[in-house]
Image (cartoon, rainbow, N blue to C red; front, side, top):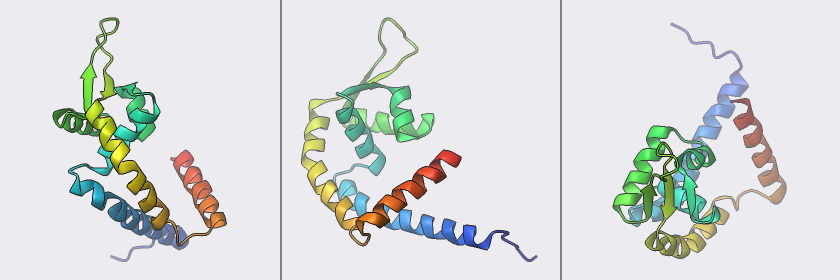
Length: 145
């Protein structure tokens, strides 16, 4: 059977995007994994920090653009490690609030400066215009999905 990709340039763009994402993710998550933390787990802690310390699980999922199952698994792992707590408010038992703990805040304070340097290094191959273009292209692709 012969495969006909249709829009060959779109397939090449997809392959390049996947390869670039994988490479950047590996470089950025290596140090986090040495701390026993996944990239998504670190993102949860950063989102909670920037949100003032607590968010409804549904809002957290929305900000991370992740599935309910994945968010629940990551939050459970962070809770077991003492980095977040979960609670159901008495006013609405269907809601789950996730809050960062002092240990979680200390971890973000310690790791975020190094993470920021790694992000800068990972994108240092691009000039400012290329970073802006990449941002816009990624927004368009995300909005079309």
